[in-house]
Image (tube, rainbow, N blue to C red; front, side, top):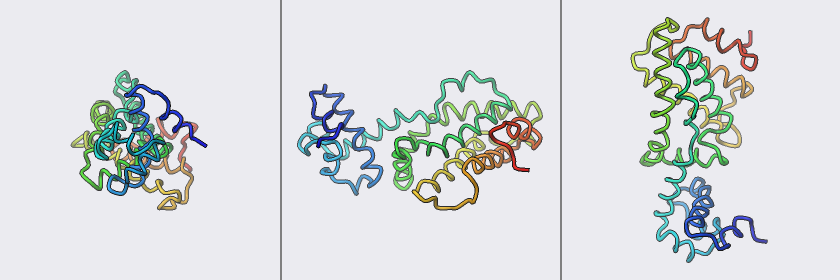
Amino acid sequence: MQTGLHIKLSSRLPFNERRQAIIEAVKNVFATKGFDGTTSRELAKAAGISEALLYKYFPTKLSLYNAMLSASVETADWLVSNHLEALKPSTATLITMVDSLVSHVLESRSVYVHDGVLGRLAVRSLLDDGAFVRALLKPFTNNWGAVFEKSLKGAAASGDLRECPADPNLSAWFVYHIAFGLMLHFFPDTAAIDYNVPKHTLIHDAVCFALRGIGLKEELIKRHYDSRSTCRIEK
């Protein structure tokens, strides 16, 4: 029986649409086996086409791999939010951003949508030249990180921090690393670490840890974060 993907690729699609369908079809193969561990036969099979037809659209495995990475970067909107720039920099916004980032990364495996394909590609990139991750994280710097820095400075000006971090940009990255590091340990089917708490509790505690790390006063964490009905500290 032919799969839906095979039928789609075998139909008379315009060149660019068929090319894009091939790119989507091979993402998981590259993510699972890496560039060196993947054969053209496996890629053609994943796309439901012959190797000869595959090479018609992509002359080399490298050209397909690069096209796949570029497409993945373009569709990875996990750190881009259209409403972010409209938010007024404030302590409440700061808390919301940290909570949203950690929750999104852990609940959906982050860049890590589409069965974790982007996450696996990101890990492989970090073990290689890091180029894919650098491109993938541009939205973090240009969007999330920029609003975070303004909100952190606003919280400092309002007296809501125990102390103002020397480098707000580093604080933004440290929050990201907390979320990313936790996500990595949940990536296997069986988590690498048994934290002995439900995931919602882990998210809550990780957010509180990050908020304390950026200098937010404890009473404000309780007022603006712990007071939410969905995320209370266990007394």
